[in-house]
Each structure stands twice: as C-alpha cells, then as structure tokens.
Length: 293
Length: 276
Image 1 (cartoon, each protein chain N blue to C red):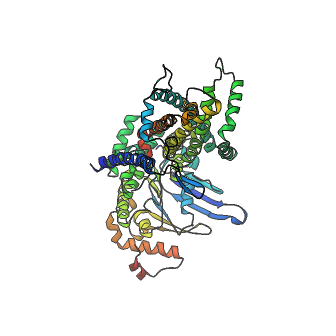
Image 2 (image 1 turned 90 degrees about the horizontal axis):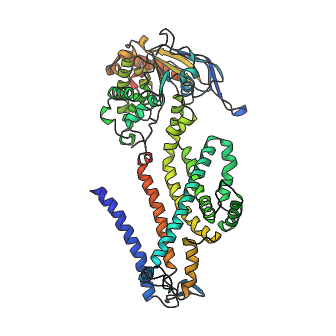
Image 3 (image 1 turned 120 degrees about the vertical axis):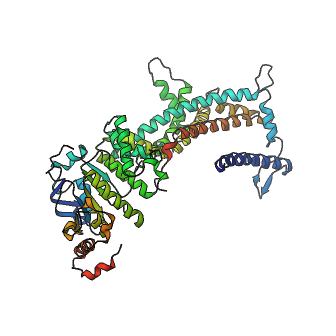
C-alpha cells in the first residue's frame, strides 16, 4: 500500500510540476507587462506580446493545424511526428554505435593501465571539440569511405555525430564500473583460480551495472541532442533539427509554430530516457549494491 | 581430496616478505617457519602490522614471498590455489550482492564446472550446515552481518577443501554474534575435519577455537611463540563445547598467549581481568 503510494506520488508530483510551469507561463503571459520587466537596460523577464510569447494552449492548438496554407499540407502534429521518428531513429543508431564504442574503450582501458593513461585524456578532450566543427569533417571523411556497396549518406554522418556525443558517458561510466569491485571480490576470484575473462563476466560486468545505467541514460539524452544538432550542421532534411530552423523562420507571422518541433524534441528525449528506464528494470538484481544492512 | 594424509596442510619455511623499496622498505615478515598438520586448527594472533594477514595471503597465493618456500599439502602455494585445495573467508563477507544466498554459495562450484544437479544438492547441504536453509532465495542485503558471514563460510566450504583460510572472519561482528559464530565454527570444523589457519586480534577467540595459537610481533613480523592450547588442559579443537570458555585450561592458555604478546610473563592473578 505504502509502496503504491510512493509510486503514485512520483507521478502526481511530476504532473503537478509540469502543470506549475505551464501555469506560471500563462499567468505571466496574461498579466505581465507587454514590454517585459527591465532592470536598467537589461530585460530580465521577456515581453508578453503575442509575437514573443504565445499561450500554452495556442501552441497545442497550432499542433492540430496544417503546417502551411498549401492545400495538401499535413497537420503540424503529423509533420512533427514524422520528423521526431526520423530523428529518434538516427539518435538510436548513434546511441548503439556510441555504446558499443564506449564499452570497448572502457574494456581496453580497464584491462591495461597503459591504455587508460594513453586514451582517457583523449576521450575527455574529444568532448571539448564543438559539434559544429566536427560535422563537416565527419561528412567529408565519411564520403571517402567505401564499405562494400554501402554509400555514405548524410544520415550516417548524423548517426556518427550522435555517437560521438553518446560514447563519452558510456566510456567513463563503464570504466568506473569495471573497476568498482571490492578488493575482497577480486581476491576471491583469484583464489578460485579463474582468469581475466571469467572474472570480467562473473564479477566486473555485473558490478558495473549501477554505474552503467546512468551513463546509458546520459548517452541517450546526448544522442538525441547530437542527432538534432547534427541535422542542422550537416543540413539533413526530414528530422527535427531542420524543422526547428524552418519553423523558426515563420515565427514572426505564426509565433506558436516554432514550438511544435520543440515539443517533438522533448518527447523523443523522454522516450529515449524511458527506454533506458525499462532496461534498468530488467537489470534490477544487478543494481543491488549495499551488501550490509 | 586425494592428498596423503600424513602430509602437513601447510608448511612454511624461512619466509620473508618485504614491501616497498629503498628507504620506504617495510619488512612485513621475516624468517617465518610454520607447519599446520592436517585437520589442525591454528590461529595467528598479534598486534596490527605483525604480518599475520600477510602470512595468510601468502599461503593463499594472493601474494608472493620475497624469500622462502610455502607448501600446501606438499605442493607449491600457486599449484594448491589452482587445484582449489583451500577455501577462504575474509573479514568482509564479500558476497556478490546481485546473487542470492544460494547463488553465492554455489559460485565456486559453478566457476569450476560442477554440474547443476550436483551443485543444488551441495548448496542445500551447506546451507543446512550453517543454519540458513530458509534463506536460500534471499539476497545478501536482506541478511544481518553474522548471517552474511555464515554464507561466506558455507561458500568457503563448498568444494570440501581440506584447508580453510580465514582472515578475521568475525572481526566486524558484535561480541554476542561472534561467540555464537565461534561455537558454530567449532562444530563445522569437527564435521568437516578440515585444517584451519585463522587470523584474529582476539585472544579468547584464538584460544577457544585453536589447537595451537601462533603469537606474532611486528617490525619485522616474526613468530614470537606458539601456545599449544591442548597442553593447557583443553580438549582438542574439534571436541570443544562452549563450556570450554569457563574451564581453567582456557584461562591458563589465555594468560600464556597474553604473556607472549606483551613479552613479559603475566602473573596468574591477572587472568581474572579478562578483556573479553
């Protein structure tokens, strides 16, 4: 009973939180000064004009209306759905590549001290390079690649860039996790006379799960952001990234429109994080860490 | 399992272990000779830094000596480790938290390819032995410290080793649980007939459990003396009951160990002021 309430409470509080944000938005929009709030010359709260700040219900309403005034234009929600699925697909591809690369790196680094010293600084350095800078490089280098009959597409470039963001938390988290077993456990394995490989499977991989799950979730969020931003940088049509740019152009005449792809991005971010949550449920026994009560 | 019974369980000759190099060098063990007979219970006792744990780790081949030889059932320590001639338990129970109690006890058997049906029978037997048959499906975090340590002992016994190495297994337990565990250990050892090398800080624990108590001193770690508890009038370790704690021989042996630890003979009256 108490457990049920604990779960229910989380849901109720979550809904209340979202409702509170929406309420603050709409109340400010209704009653805030049209020119916003200025301290000296600095505007600390935005203008509340129709152009600057649509009401929340206007944004939702806009989702139900056609994208453009063209006769065969689909509803915005339909367009956002398609773009979201497209971006989510690329993000998922990037996530998988990133996770595989991250795990392999972590494995190599945990196995050999020298690999760790050699690689870890580069792994960290890799994240300081702005995405905008690597996007054209990925596209150019990708186009030089010939893997069988596969021709490098812009989609591949986007997935690789998403992977570039996603591998980092996995590499760092998995490394930490693989090194996490107690000395007692490691010595026990040695006493049993089992080798590196069996120790990895019996001890190190299971005990890395509590470190790995947050890393995978972070990687999922990074992959979504990476995919959306890379679509812009690469100039790939069909996904949310390009849609954000396209719809932003319409902002002056149709202020609620740019919010549509933003909702799409939020939604796929939640889906990605939720998928990892499910994975966490499957791996539940391995999340037990506290040995003593 | 197929050792010649006359072979000592452990035989240590002229062992020296030095940690570090140059000025920071620490001599953890120097010129240590020790023999543990098959089926004998021997405790190592001494202040922190006397090398008692180091000696146990050397026997377990978790560490290598700088000089000297170690043999377990007549084989080099490494061979004995690979042949699984000993079971081991540490101060931390060291159970894998994601495995159930049964899964933990079964682990060494599983790692060494014992087939599932045999494993199941053996695990049931072991949990019966340590009195945890009802907890087979629980996870370690649902057990108290004493219960976890019993699981660890069951795990150490899983492959019916002729030798048990125990590094302060009861060190983290409260006094009441500790005495109960000692009683159980005596019973378990009597049932299995295994030799035991047992590291502890506690004089009464060492005396109550052991046939012989080996007293060590630090800097450098050396053996200062051996007290044969049986010579003080106690029954052999396997035939002891908890009443042994009240017998005169027990107090005599405690006094002997204490005088060796402190380097001066302690008058017998001091025996009344037992610490524990």
